[in-house]
Length: 178
Image (cartoon, rainbow, N blue to C red; front, side, top):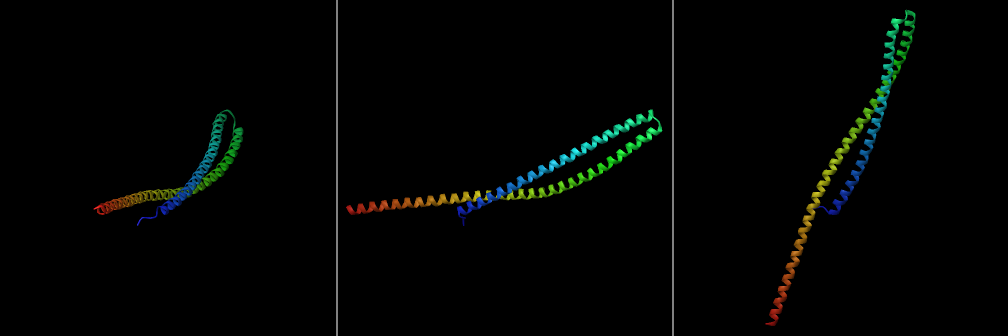
């Protein structure tokens, strides 16, 4: 037995509302991805700064080698201690920043994992809604065909009734004259 077209329409309207909600959630997920991308960009900038500082230290070490040739042992030992102190400080800073970036990357990965799961669920829901909408479209087409067939049958019956009435009227008039 065919469903009432109004019920199908109301159900399709409800499903469309659900689809709008799903799309809102998808928009939120995309914005979360943008935030994660910005956090990773900041981490990359911090690493770039550390790389620049390491390059400067490497240049200083190159200069130290040159200086070693030109100066004596006491000056050499003094400069080595200065550079050693800078290296220790730099190692501590690198370790702290590395730990901070590593923690930030872990939290971004966790957030992305949750967002990916949410997006997969949203995609599945959207696919199901699309399939349901296709089914409603096919069901509506069947209802339209049924309504057209019933209308044509009713019109045919009315036409036959009119022809029968016309023949009866003719018969009455013919018999009434004769």
